[in-house]
Length: 132
Image (cartoon, rainbow, N blue to C red; front, side, top):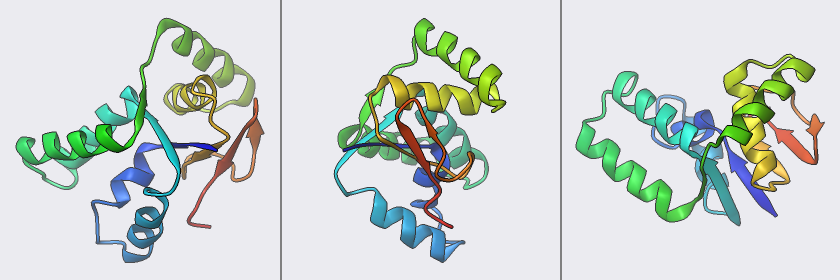
């Protein structure tokens, strides 16, 4: 079973300010086959540098860890076009739809995120908010 991880889930594994979310997210990551995208890597870098005040050398190390554990889905023109269609149909923001399009293109069965409707299934991908 392929599982796609949105930025917020990965970010919680680097933030102990919310211990319950940290624990849940940390337990999810090492299980099974994990996928994320180039978009998530960029968003994570932004969160780590801004909100968490990580140094750039620390961010590089985090990115090395993530890319060694995850298959990285690269955003393409087809991903962008898919995201636009999903956004129009399901009324999610473009950037959330880009996450969903990546999960669909990577043939994932689960998308872990806080940003969607829990348990909704879109094109074979079930959205799971692990914090509910």
